[in-house]
Image 1 (cartoon, rainbow, N blue to C red):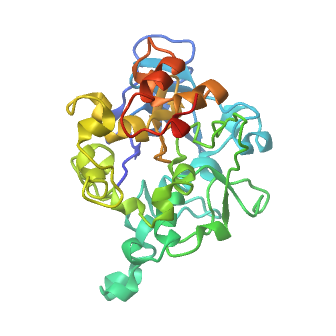
Image 2 (image 1 turned 180 degrees about the vertical axis):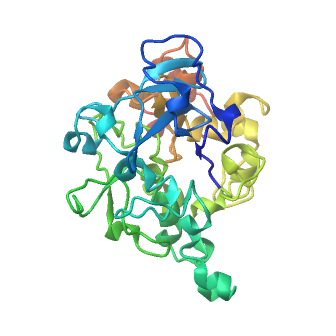
Length: 351
């Protein structure tokens, strides 16, 4: 389960921001923080006012170990125009808490528990406690088609409710969705316009920002072929990065080995033209480049699984995995190199 939100009193070691050195961005004290959010890429700080929580206007960049401003600018997230410019008038209830809690009640503003607990993915569990059989609980692995992925997409997508506002409030999460439902009945994904770079998308349709794994995934061949999120990830936790079921290339090679229809044929080095133990021979290096921004220059991985050609970079500015690694080279250099690779179609490489 995701433990993104933590109480700093119960978990003082989880506070990563430097509160000991004065900084003009930090207009609050550690003692003012009711919750901390995030321990991997960024850490934000919530305070409670009345029965709502609000995010302080400074966040800690964990990788760079520095403070950065936190503020959703007008013209970025769709909901910004519906809320005051003052950060302390943008409550987390309608904007965050629906995904970072279980059973957030929009009337009482109370939750069953903070973070992603069992009922977030398996639905109401009281009947299952009374009668613990398969028919009294939702098992996402047994849901048909997209409804299995919808359990994940309820939070791992950028979108808008189909009905807004609700009782005068604009929510940035799918109010009313329960595991087993069809998510698209209450939630629509942010549209992308091919050829245009926006806050949410690159010109080719790849996600431009974090929390859009689902937006990427639904347009992928993996989704078309019926591969579900749980095919790669185990949300109950593993010892591997991103809760993968298997480490590194092993998770990909379950289906994409040389003896399988999905291929590719030949050895790993033949396919990647890099040494087997190098970064360039990691499947994710080329098929899941880090192009979705989470904070400053820290990016998370794409989930379309498409190889982004250097020609696409030249034509529309979408970062490609070749020059993202070979930073001293140009897209044209990468295109020329790819044309010399055995088995690579020059039509696909372009240029």
